[in-house]
Length: 472
Image 1 (tube, one colour):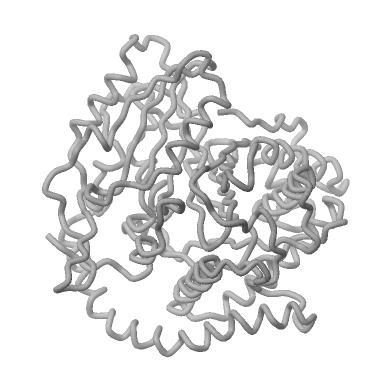
Image 2 (cartoon, rainbow, N blue to C red; image 1 turned 30 degrees about the vertical axis):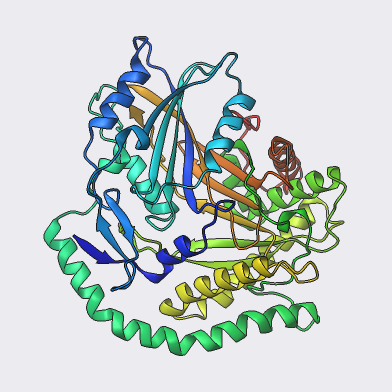
């Protein structure tokens, strides 16, 4: 079995290096069931290794000289590589767990095998156990990965069936999938033609809008190449630093509404404010507004196809001297302007826009010119997660922190994922330039408390907000 690999997915393989792996993942925390035996986690790992992988998790990249790059079925899977059972040494605290995740997250996946791994980790001081997984971005995007994880769990705490994410068959029927692939192939020729015609205009547009913003001729919109250069855009090296934060979704939504914005506006504001404090502590405060590159899903409702379907917008954040309230109002205005720019693009051009942005960003980072401006300073993304309580063989899912990839010369990725009543933040950074990332998570939580406390009096905020948590 072989099938073509879409260009946007192939790009993640082409841009990957030993210091810059391109997989996405998550750290999931589970409460141990009350009556679980001593071998509960080891038994889970053994059962996972018996599962049969479904597409795309039984496919490897084929780059033969006689054909275009494509997916082909792997002859065999080394399940001892794909599913691993780890035990933390005592005391097994949060810092110890996150250090282990950082060391795993920096490793490139073996392309001779399907590009995914899963680790079941016990020995946590807080009790329970963790699951950390990696999936190459060429196989799925964040939303598709989460859909598979959710499908592998159960809303029934009494359910004992084990079906890992790589064994979940997402397509409703093989016949429907075949018809879908045929239709896609028929449309491919027309699509490539339209995208080729659009490429030149988009390429020039990306550079022009950045130049206009720097010259003061453009006050808003989705504008790359205007953020300051600093530790956020230092050369990406192999080491990673990671951190986590949990905030209550209800509070975030209420605060966003109080200011006339959204939950995403709140997230951008508090991460921006947290970054200002964190970078100042490093002795490198930015002199200009930071720019966030925000991936946006292009998936229709119910679309779980294993590929990447997304575009990006660029949002200029607050000025250096702004307080958190003024920063929030600036973010709301900037986000609205960026969305206007993005909506002006046809559907085909929106995905091409993202590909060109990634290509330009990677090219600029490879050149490594210190005087050049980075395409953006951080990646900020929100991936919908499970809103109902889920279980794994009776173990309650307590948190789900995204652990995303770095790239395009950007050394910080902050991804949010809703999990029950919490919004779980996963911070991943270039460890060489951005150490001790837990300080950024704490500063972000502190900024949220300040934004909430200053909310307009008319806001119908929850009576008792939960304390921000950096649990893990």
